[in-house]
Image 1 (tube, rainbow, N blue to C red):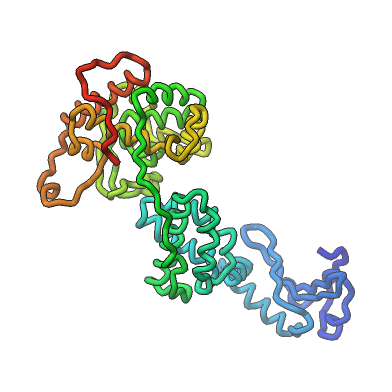
Image 2 (cartoon, rainbow, N blue to C red; image 1 turned 60 degrees about the vertical axis):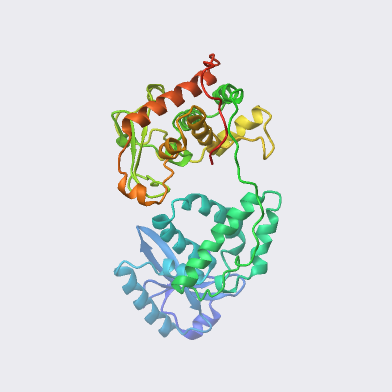
Length: 402
């Protein structure tokens, strides 16, 4: 702010020759003329919003006469009195029609419709937002989209996920006729071919992973062990709430609950998971709130970083050998079938919903059966984890689930 401050009845003649500094207009108390040492001079509207001063630049004092500046101040002051922030409006207008505005509008939609919106938004924020936020989305071309896609050539799966997340934004914009977008720049970009992941822990790896979890974040370590022993999806475990645990059953609502920050189930159908005693002893189920709470009071977030630490500690650093949180869930599912309980039981416990006439009419909860199978599988995996001998009269652990 200029060091020299004055107050006077400003005229157009004086405004054009005023020295550097700030001059308040005697006729319009919220109007000031600001002259920079460079000679640049502009009209300023000064007001308060949320008990803080705001300095709103109206425009050049060489192109706007003082009488017009006073009229503009009257209008702006009326907006402030009505609760409107002129500076916020100006910033919104400055970014209107940008990719930033489009992706933020899409995010509000995705939160209601897309269970995996958090993961998709991470890709957008990391790979697209830094380069595209100021661009007009209607002018983003396929060539523009190929740049971040090719930049992820060494991580083909991430490249595919990034393209999928970006494509969803543009497809939505086209369907909603937003921002003048008529072309999806990701359309026509051939996704990388990837092998479907089938990684499960071998019997010898289970105790190694279990022990390595002692050296990572303790909260995330427990969450990962719960994934292994119950087969629940990692994203569900990180958002587990005590309110949903009743009589040792984890009753997971199908639909998301924004108030509780519960993401809902992948297939939008409610599901219940039995929590064996060993699992209940690992966690605190009393009261309300998140079982795995972050320091800020929300869910702890993704478990991938902790699992990467485990993989690194065990020397499993290639795409084929590394372990992901979902591999623990897959290991649970493979153990279900490997111990002779069948694929239907595995699908039921993992909340794999199959659309069929049979499922429409077969509403049985199988609670007693599911409880028995979960106890058996959890006990088997726990014996492996703790290095205890496994009876030889059981079927071997096999990888036959996705």
